[in-house]
Image (cartoon, rainbow, N blue to C red; front, side, top):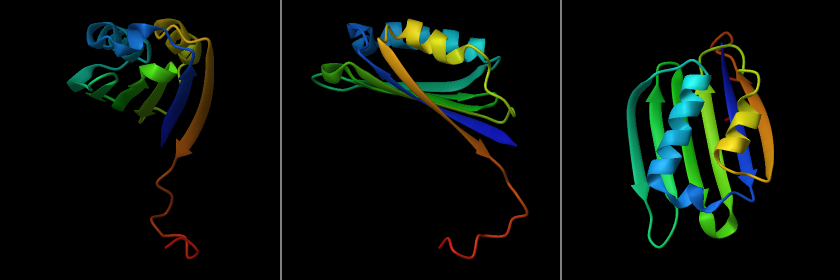
Amino acid sequence: MAVQLIADLYECTDAINDVEALKEAAHQAIAFVGAQIVEECTHKFEPVGVTYFAVISTSHFSVHTWPEYGYAAIDIFSCKDEVVEGIAEMLKQQFGAGRIVVRTIHRDIGDGEMDKDAK
């Protein structure tokens, strides 16, 4: 049904505090996964940090940064059933990360019945 990629990027360069550099990296990553931007929003925090969010043709792409820790959190949610090969390495390069941890969550509608143990 859908896949969600969660990436934690560590040891990032100061580019994660630059709104325009961050937007350009996000645009390249969004194109890399074969999606188009429907709408986007950025917010620059004071004294540091940026949040970027894009509604994309396959769902959404977001970045939240903590430059003082060299950390960026990226979330790609896509209605495609697979994660594009190479996206993790591309994100690492785009954000100048020394290290990246990636998790993938496969989302499924199922039969619509709520798990009786989950409330």
